[in-house]
Amino acid sequence: MANEQKQVRELQEGSYVMMEDSPCKINAYSTAKPGKHGSAKARIEGKGVFDGKKRSLSQPVDAKVWVPIIERKQGQVVSVSGDDAQVMDLDTYETFTMRIPDDESFSPDDEIEYLEYEGQRKVV
Image (cartoon, rainbow, N blue to C red; front, side, top):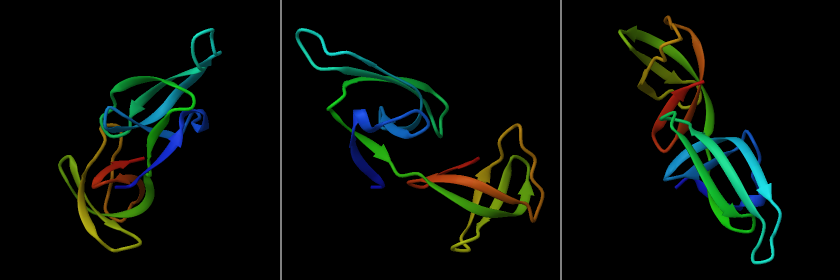
């Protein structure tokens, strides 16, 4: 698996964390001071990288969480058919099909940047 463990206090806005078994990008990170009966707590709000769902997580700052290792790669559009594009990875020359986001339009020979994590891919 492409994950590593980190303490909650090491996380920051803009980085990634696993929430409900899904990789999420952190949108908000806040901490509460330690009280009389416990340690400092962190509240993390994020948005799913591949599904777009909002999620939140509340943990002690010394707890360990899983952080996904999401790779940023370059690809070239080979062909476009409907809502799908045939993309070739520029490093491995592997060819695969990706769904085109609604606000994007591709044409053959366009170079794109995409995120990949455990077989899931998304255009940046």
